[in-house]
Image (cartoon, rainbow, N blue to C red):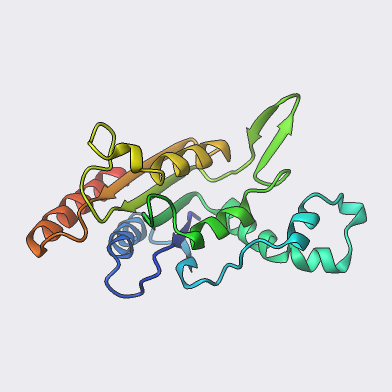
Length: 205
């Protein structure tokens, strides 16, 4: 059975362009995998806390030395990593907030990026341990010009960061779909949304 892990990071519940495109992607995936399972987390609501000193200590404590308190501090990380490792496909929807990923998405990333679980450091080099086969990342930008070769590409710290991170964790097949100018006039937004939906369909073929 195929598994999809969906991570939505927009603070908006309504009117989110990334969520709407994520809904389109999920519907396509369900049609392709009628017996598949979807696990969905709206991390944009702040449900993933910022990483704590106790959690960091737990991450670097050998299993034979871990205490009940440290086990409790790393329990959420264990759960989130298990969700990721069980997924064949990872779907992330992420608006650009002040040129980078939302803090809520970074909170999830800090919980799942963990030595010995999703990556390893051996013989002077890193190796990804994530079993997830592919990822689709849907990004939204309020203005135009953030993509490669465009005038404001230097201000795009969202897509390059997520591409590096997911590659680092061992995901080999990573596709990005972007929608720009989400704060433009209605006609522009509708046109860009239609084009992005077509890109989603192509990415999931």
